[in-house]
Image: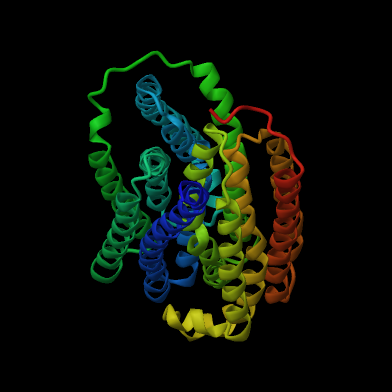
Length: 439
């Protein structure tokens, strides 16, 4: 009987871990879906009450913020990984000491970025077709909170505090939507006001995250080996930054090369495609610390298979829906008639071209959690090639008389490089070698 009990214990434990994984994933997915839905609701509000050119500027500046956050892209998984793998008191003090030092460093990095923008102020305004300089100033402010956010959420993620990680998603979304409604519907502001509202929403969310991590501020600090830490954070930042770049860069090139009145329609279709990433991202957030924790303890886990399978099913179902009823998400989001006429044909293209990127996000996070940094140079090479292709295709497509055909070429370029990125991730996931210990 004892032998039989011992034989069933591993199976029972595995079932328990799978149940916990899906329960936590379900909560994070629910909160990110709710927060994301509220954030998404921002776009029809802005699109219906500001000129099409201003909506294009607003969406482009949001992608600029995403790119500004790339220097901090590796911070969330680094803190998630280190906090999850910190099993001794000394390791926990090291994580907290690093947390303090990084927060200070972020401010100075952001300050350098702000000075750079100020130096090239006129060139940036002209390149992105920004009429109100206040919009760019607000974007610089959002850059600071967007760089701090990964540090805060990474600590919560690594501690597996998924309850408040979920609430922060909701607070960020609700705060953004409420402020957008105030500045657009009540105060009559345009892109500059909308970006300022984004700043306020994110600042409130960070305040809540600070409250949830308040216990780390009074802990005795220890000496941090910053050289060793940078050897880990740099490849993580580059590896995860590739995904952010692939997700955001196309809108900036469209804003640069296409007529201002057309960029808003591309932005509307693009938000439908990018929603695939946001919808499936909660699974990846739950997966990362679990893989890092298992790697630190040299344990096997099936979390990657579960996450990849669920992401593929959800992403494919969404893409099929966008193909059969491409107008539905635009109408559900209450975009006006002109968006339905011009943006609808682009929606299926975006949905299918973004699907490989959703799977790549899962695999990149798995590679980084296992410290398989050999993949990073190749991932960066794909991103560099993508940037070059966007510049070449954008310059040609933006001059076409048929604007729809030109916009499709930009989306097809996105899809081709997303497939290349997925193939690279698959190769290193199943054929690559670990090049550094996980702890």
